[in-house]
Length: 463
Ligand code: 5AD
Ligand code: SF4
Image 1 (cartoon, rainbow, N blue to C red):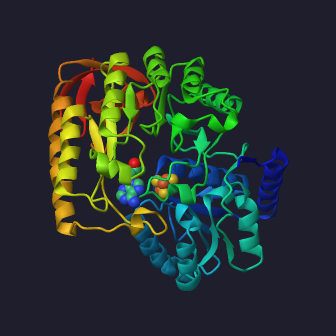
Image 2 (cartoon, protein in one colour; image 1 turned 90 degrees about the horizontal axis):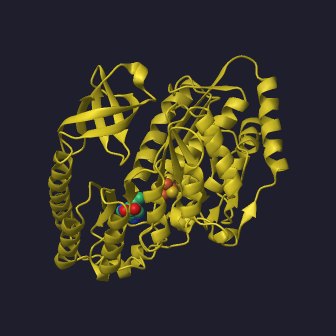
Image 3 (tube, rainbow, N blue to C red; image 1 turned 120 degrees about the vertical axis):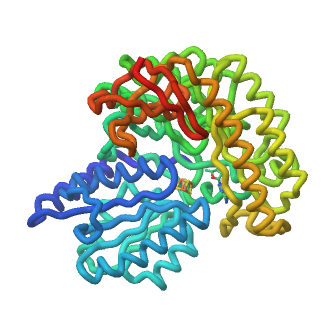
C-alpha cells in the first residue's frame, strides 16, 4: 500500500532539528557507518542531512563521535557478522564516552531476530529503527537522547514515500538519486522484500526537480536507484514507466551521465533499450543480474525468466546498443544446485561474455523460502564452483578489457587513485580507467587513450 508522508510531518522533523541545534552547547559530532548497497549509501546521506540540520559535524573518529549510527545490510550473513563485530568493538568508545549514543538502522534493524539479539546482547545500542522510519529519525534521536531509554522502532511493514528529507552529499562528482524503494519480487533467497517492504515510486516531478538541482549544482554522474527500476511507475497508475523517466532525466540541460540500477531481467523492456540507445547522456551499460544459468534453479529462485528468455533480452539489447557493457550478479551454491546446474551457468556466461560480474556464495536468510530448502552440496563443493566461476569470468573480463587497448574513450574523472598522481575515471559504459592527470581534472570529461589493462580496470593517458 502506497503511503505518502505529508510535507508537514517532514517540516516537524526539520523543526526538531533546528531546536536541537539551537539548544546545543559546544560542538557535537556524528559518525554514520554504511554497509551494503547504494540505497543504503543514499539513506546515509539523508541521516547526515538531518544530523547536520541538528547541528552535528561529521567525523570518522568513533572516540570523538557523540552519535554513532550503523546503517546496516542484511543481504548476506557475512555483512551481519561484520556489523555485530563492529558493534562489539564500540564497547571501548562507549566506556570512554558514556553519553555516546549508538544507533542501528537499515535492513538488519527490520529483522525481528536481529532486533531481539540487539535487545538482549548489545545494551550499548540505545536506538534501533528500520529503513522506513528514517524520515522521522530526528524525533527518534531526540527520544533516545532525552528520555535515557532504549528506543526500538523496526517499522510496521508498510513502505512509505517521504519527500523533502535533506541530503548531505560528500561526493562532488557523483550523486545517488532514489527513484523508488522496496521490492515485490520475492526471489526465494532474498531478504530485501522483507526489510524494504513493497515497491513504491517517487513521483516523476519530484525526481526531475532533484535531478535538475543536482545538474545545476555541478554533479556529472547521476545514478537513478531502485531495487528494480524496471517496475518504476507501476504504483503511480501506470501513466509513466522507467524508460520515460530515463528519457526525461537525460533531457535535462547540462553535461552529465545518467546511470541506473538495478534491472530485473523479467521486466527489462525494449522501450528501455531504445531509451539507452537514443539518450546521449545515458550510460551504455546494463547491470542485469542473472543469478544462475540453470532453468531449474531459476525456477526455484522464483526469478520468472529462463536462460532462453534472458539470452533473447541480451541479444535484443545488443541490437539496440551494440557495444553495451554488461555486468551481472551470480549466486553460487543455491540449495539443490548440482554440478550440472553450475555448468549451465558457466555455459551461459561464456555465451553472454559479461564485462564484469559480482559473484556471491549463497547465504541462507532467515524467513526466506530458500532458507527452508534442502541444501545438498558441501561447502567445499560450493567454494570450488565459486573459484571456477571467478576464474572463467576473470579471463573473459581481461579479454574484453584487452579489446579497449589502443582505442580512445571519453571518460569522467571522479577521484584520486591510491597510486600517487593517478586519477580514477569511468567510461560511458562504467569501466574504470586509471590515468595520470592533475587533480584539477576531477569532475571533468576528457578523451583518454587506453594503453593497458588488467582484469578489473583499464589504464590510459590523456589524448
Ligand atoms: N545469498 C547470496 N547472495 C545474495 N544476493 C541476494 N541475496 C543473497 C543471498 N541470500 C545477491 C544477489 C543480488 C545481489 C545484490 O546480492 O546476487 O543480485
Ligand atoms: Fe541494500 Fe539489500 Fe543490503 Fe538492504 S539488504 S542494504 S536493500 S543490499
